[in-house]
Length: 303
Ligand code: C5P
Image (cartoon, rainbow, N blue to C red):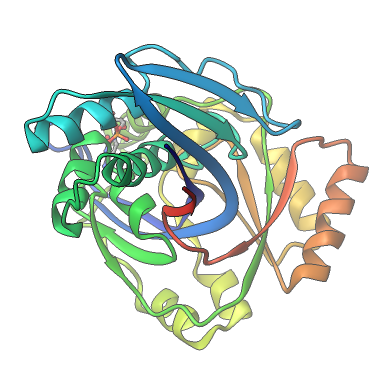
């Protein structure tokens, strides 16, 4: 038997970051948003853990590990340990989410693996237990289970769905070179140390929640914010040009996705997204995706 589970890319409509905690993480007040770029994870019975990778044409696999250090093996082992069973599986990852792009592709794969193995092994793990296991795997993994649009608290692992009545369209513009999430958080800490940034207790702004509830694109354009944008731009000053180009291409707002380097452009509708994507292509960008949001969290597609 094989089971395929699909999981979406995410970015943060709002990413509020507080001062470094003692455990090495930062407190977050974020609004996660799942968009229509997907990885498919297919699992089947095996005596030992094995990971295979493939990708859509335009996705570079880069340095995704296929050994035990891949997050999907950690996910499988954590699920088995939770149930006190000793099992393994073959996990095939088909990537449609750009790698190391700040779109949480690895977290999507981990969430998809949890759902797929839960089915394959007939475990019927409760939602609460799945979310708890997901939270141990990575800060963004619980959201990849839930999908749509949700507030993230704690270090990002505590998720609470929010009303989102928009039918949003985004253009994502990728970068050839990835950015490391810990490096961007370190750059944030350096800006704090230098007094350039003064982090307060992070909060989700009311006007963003209102924009989502109303499905109001102009309001959403004004409400997007990301505290990791300044440190990411400090590490990658070249990204400033992508922001300028996105604005010139007619995007309603331009924002860094998570810790970057992917840049997200808010569009009015699908036709406008095609226009913005075309304008970016004309400016010689070659990693461009148009995607709607919100979309579902990890879900079974074939079994
Ligand atoms: O939780 P996750 O494995 O995705 O985190 C990767 C790294 O990102 C952490 O080791 C930490 O350096 C940084 N991080 C952070 N604060 C968060 C989430 C992640 O500093 N809330």
